[in-house]
Length: 73
Image (cartoon, rainbow, N blue to C red; front, side, top):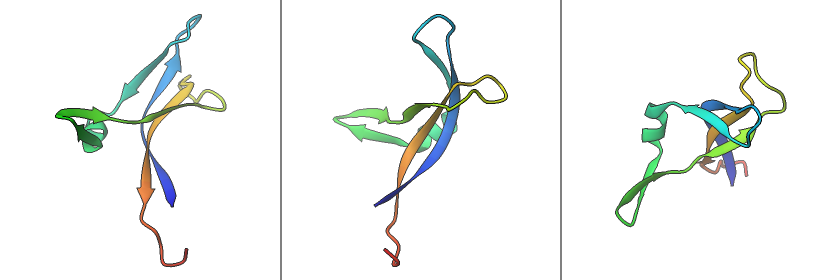
């Protein structure tokens, strides 16, 4: 089973705190919601970047998407 990543935003660690402030793309969030016991949820991953990007962002946010199995596997 293979997974791909769909990136939906980035964040930055708040100076002197263990908090990461994140900005997310709402259209992408709405595309990946699911229902459980009558409530709507969204599940995503938050990962630290190896080094800050050109805008000083230290973290990335993405969905793990299960890819269909190919005939080659």
